[in-house]
Image 1 (cartoon, rainbow, N blue to C red):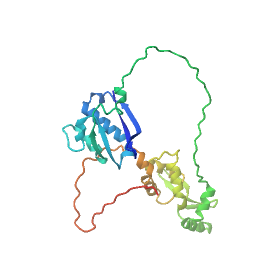
Image 2 (cartoon, one colour):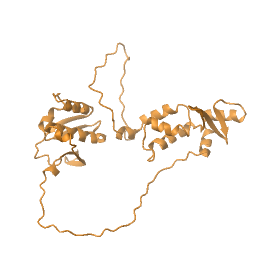
Image 3 (cartoon, rainbow, N blue to C red):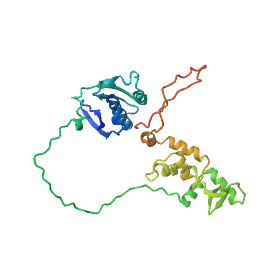
Image 4 (cartoon, rainbow, N blue to C red):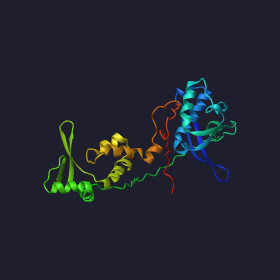
Length: 288
């Protein structure tokens, strides 16, 4: 026993073009759901799986289970259905009913009559074995000491520290080795580190290498910070990493929100003065 669905897109000629098919089997606990709960589960699961396509867009959901047509219009006495309805409130869609006989695409596997062949002929085929090769292309950005030293000389703040250290003036928490400015960090446990001072021109490239590259995996703020804080230094590192991770387009599109729904919307107290409360909407990136 399972659930499934299909995502269609209307072509300019008015035909329905399939974009993605999806299905899965039900767990033992889900198999004990009532019929309307199973149908609603299929709806919630399909919409959640297709979130990158549906979020922020108006769409129409077609089902052959007529009781679900009221799902986004009124509440029920079923707590599970109400929670699912609340979960779908972030989407903009309307529900239309279609007869079960017309819903052939989503239910084709469960309704397709399987005919056994009269004669079954077993044949053995010899498989050809050959070598398999895998090629991965990764753009490697160099952060060696030579390149860091060149960019430090172009940074006004670091260049000033470099000149002071070169003239023999002591700067607290800074040192100069082989023409490279290092920051002296005191970590808990009496650990002292000397980390290269990263100039402003290299920060975005370094964050891209440690967050966006195929070998980095778009990790979260704390994990990205722990990877960068030991080999490098620049002022306001955590704040910059946090802003970069929150601004990552791919993380916003494809990372699943695992937090529980926040509940029903609550009224906002009206402001008492002019321009006391302002609202902003964000969108993008948009095609050029």
